Image (cartoon, rainbow, N blue to C red; front, top):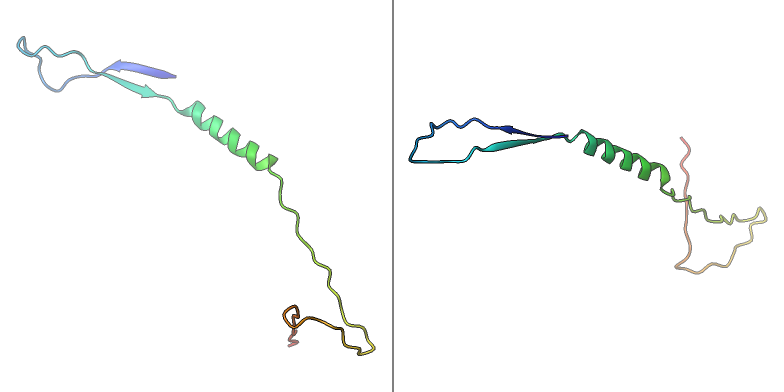
Length: 82
């Protein structure tokens, strides 16, 4: 999963400068990526999708009687036939 390997220094070590060895770390992120994809697929398949909201449509009758409506609550739809 994780490796620690000794890194090579580009400078020559002398007796005056005593430096410790630098160790480089290499972390394998394969398991983390797998876990991320598993969580993403889990949340996608378990979410509750919103149900489409419907509204009752009241159509005028064939007699030609007008229906009483509020002025602010009226909606006029015109269909174009081509």
